[in-house]
Image (cartoon, rainbow, N blue to C red; front, side):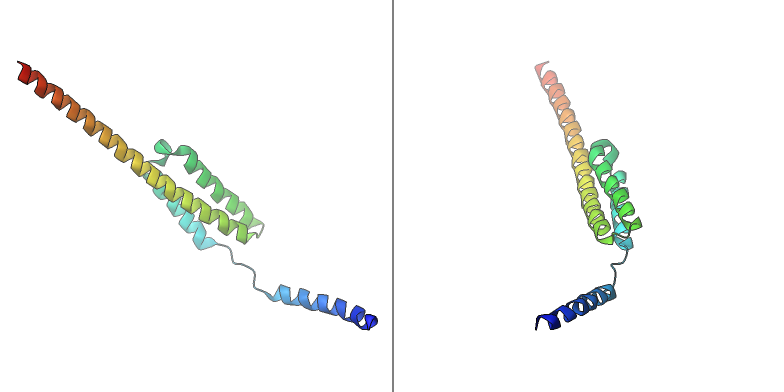
Amino acid sequence: MKTGLKRKAPLLGLSLLVLSSCTPAMQPPDSQMALANEAVEEATAAGAYEYAPVELKAAQDKINQAKLAMQTKDNLTAERLLKEAEVEAKLVEAKSATAKSQRAVDELQKSIDLLRDEINRKQAQ
C-alpha cells in the first residue's frame, strides 16, 4: 500500500503544477494606473502642492512603486499600490479644498471684523 502511494505522489504533484500553470495570470492594472494618475492630477489642480505636499508625494511614490512592480510582473502588488495611491490622492484633493475654504472663511472673518471696527468708530464720532 505504501509503495502505491509513493508512486502516485509525484504524479499528483506534477498534476497540481500543470493545473496551477493553466490559471490565467493577472493582467497589468493599466486602468487602475490611469485612475491613480488622474486622481493625482486632480489633487495637484486643487492645490495639493501648497496644502498637502507630503501626502501628494506619498501618492506619487506609490504610483512609482506600482510601476516597478508591474515591470517585475507583480501585478497584484501593483494594483494594491495604485488603489492606495488613488485613495490618498482623493484625500489630498479633499484636504486641499478644505484648506482653501478655511482660508476664504478666515479672510471673510477679517473683512467682517474691519467693517465692525469702522462701524463702531463712526458711531463713536
